[in-house]
Image 1 (cartoon, rainbow, N blue to C red):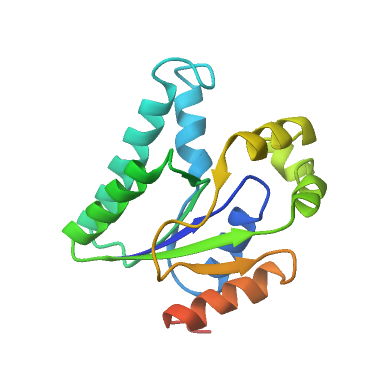
Image 2: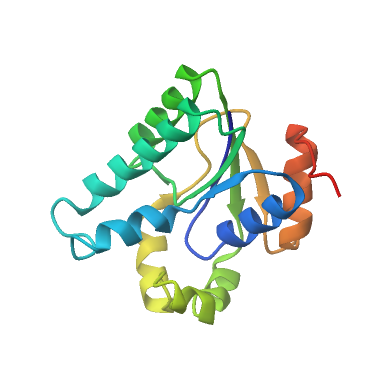
Length: 180
């Protein structure tokens, strides 16, 4: 299995790029909010036990995909250093244990651009962070940066469309486009 690990701060376009990528190559999506939404059915956001459940769900889903031969999985994630280093190492170990490969992609844009995007109706509908105030708190509190891997691709979603960003990912990693 190949795991395209799309990461960056809230509102950089991870899901938008993931969807554009999956229109180009056959694969499956593991949106970071799927585990969060599941955990919200049991806990209030951030309550004791919430993040542990989110991490367990993500790891279990990734392990199931790798163990059952899903050829390509595109995962979105708000990676913060050093907070998520252990979680990332766990993902990488799960993929490698099954003979797979993790392909890290860091998406970024300016703070000003993220502030324009954060209130988009689709973010509100999906119960994502949707206020400039919340985004400012997160950006000031966490170090959203590229995973500490020399092969991590860094792409600016402000300068390039989601389609152009996805095409860069396809070309960089030699992913096989879907047949038309």
